[in-house]
Length: 351
Image (cartoon, rainbow, N blue to C red):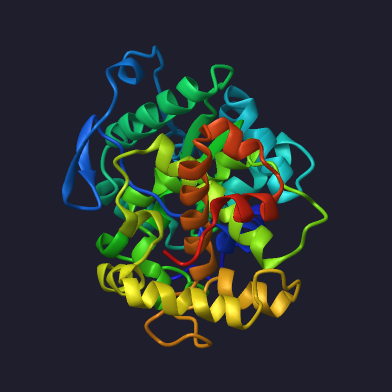
């Protein structure tokens, strides 16, 4: 069931603006002892565990769905002013009252209570998410002592938005992240091959990749494919550093079969040869950027076994080689805005 009769509110605007950004970002849980690449055990440093930091997720939908009028909703929004300000900004709404009016229309929409009950019963406790965010944020605090964790909220929006994250606030649309447990299907705008990423275990690293933007320096004048590759590679590198137990299958959003294909030595060389022979790295073609870095079920220009966003995957491999060669710290890597310099110093040859 979808809710086509919901008012064209800020939720719809948010969906158009942020849905496809999310699809490029991926994530999974971080625990003290967990699994890396689904096989090898991973241990988090004691000095990071000892950092004093606590995360509390506010499940605002539990308060909002009890309200019967604008005044009640308005009181809750004023209780969380940063949330209200974010909704005003992202939804192009004038003030708290306008946000409250839109929420009331949502709460009164046909079928919304059924969705609320389904999400409430199947999403489960947010305690696990709190632990995952907490450990990830401790890592950020370790590398960036001035880091102030964003406040985290959940909402139910009638499939209006999935995830918004910046250095001030993280908003999670719970109904998007039920995986195959949800009674109601995801909006038809989401292709089937992307739906596997809409599960709770993707939320934290998705958010981290958004948060990486604050530290990810770029050359605004560089519009090459390589610059895009390095930009996303740095976002992945940041996320892997903050979530050292993160499986590659979740980081990239690839299936195990897709990972096995692109990690095969001969296939890696074949993919790299494709980029070199077609002179893609320094191309400024929007078509090339779309083809090799954006969402697709596979990169047809290479073959049907090469998953979409392959340029982002290559970007991380270049960054890892650069870090190894230069013995660069995370901070140095994130500060380096010259994509060509990173590529040259990495001496990456498809290995």
